[in-house]
Length: 212
Image (cartoon, rainbow, N blue to C red):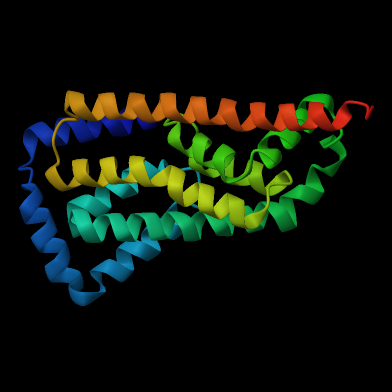
């Protein structure tokens, strides 16, 4: 079904007239009026509560609202949606998987991610291939505290959100500079995650050393 839908969209792009970006923005703002920002925000929040890539809505925010308002709407909606799915995992899903929390690999992941604080969460957000919703659920199920999670989500999501919104605003074909920026974000995320978890391991090792 997905392949068929993609083929139909590609065929339609060659056959049907494709409006210019400024025409799409003018139509959306004209149809929605002052409610365009609120509608985009609500759509962003609730659509990212299901497994749909968040980047799609960041691009749409840039296309429909422009770079400044688009970034503000996208990052605010990211924080609200992330907090909602985090709370859902914390209060509903954690009880379903409680019996697996003592497994060695899960326990290690829990200690490293929760011990890394906001830096560990922000580093995960910087990695483009780390999906938004599963990371939210993972942090909610594990013992990541709410405020470090929220701060890490906002700070780590902001660079990629800005890039996506700007691309949506210009609607270019992903210029090489954007690819380089995404690669830099991924490297920074991996380095930050290693540093956060490494610092946690060192502090634990120091606590385990006997006092002379």
